[in-house]
Image (cartoon, rainbow, N blue to C red):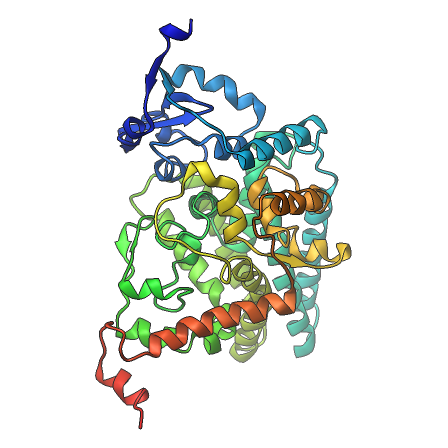
Length: 447
């Protein structure tokens, strides 16, 4: 039977790496996903980013055991020649199997119920503070509660995007729309589009959209070469404006985070009203309309425009804690240029992530995402399980001499600011060949 198998080399597999001709290998079997890519629940981008190579670890990370049966109809009849599995991958797959046998992927606890209940209580407090109180301090307190509501609601949306938190897929999708589109004004479709690409290409400067913040931020001087974003399909121009803003990014980081939510609203609208294929576009637009109905209406009950401005800014500032947290998890970690490699899944995740150490009673505040490495390695694992698997992941990293970085919230901030400052000083270097203008020369005159 071995003699009847048809084989192709890894080099031949690499040739099938574009839309319309997209092959991948899973455990040495080669599959043609050219047509399936358009129907893939996780979107086409993850498949395109890993096209033409073995993707076993990524497939195992994102798919339950029930997904394997759907591969048969995509099998090309070819096997990958000289297929080998690294020691790291063997250990990683063993962990996934063990966690699955222990039922950890199915044991979700009561996190979703408690989170949704807290969101409902906070929404009631916000309504009471705005509608029934006249004090400006009560209004600002309500704004702070609204900020916390958005944070917790985002965590539920994030959880439901990675695994089923409700009793059925239909209810799960409804939970996504309510906690994302309706309550926060940020489309779950936009989140899936960017977030799946981020997980697959963690900390790739040209493939990971979560690092592409030109002209405001650059975590590496390699952005100064005006990299082309393979996610957005456009050049990230390091022009005079970008040079100027990035030169002071370590000073502007926190102020920008306080209004970063505006960008998320803008990105949501740009996607939903673009020519891209958006799953459940109408459903997503309806959810956004719900948000832009209740939120302005709530603001209209405040007595004057100064209070409305203060209310919005305060709620945004509270939510900035979450934006900052997401930056801390990756900004000061290792980066690379180029597409992700399916053969070093575990290594790339450990290299591009940073955990935030905290007490267990703070897990609700960070939504479990302080265990960023654990989440990246096991994205289907419910957040209530992440603390339990952390010691196992740490031991595995130690066994294979891979980084396991866990810093306090303060130290993670310090590390991130140092990274931003380093890039800022490099951007100020007049020997850098990036274009200059009169404003730049005037602000940065030496001697």
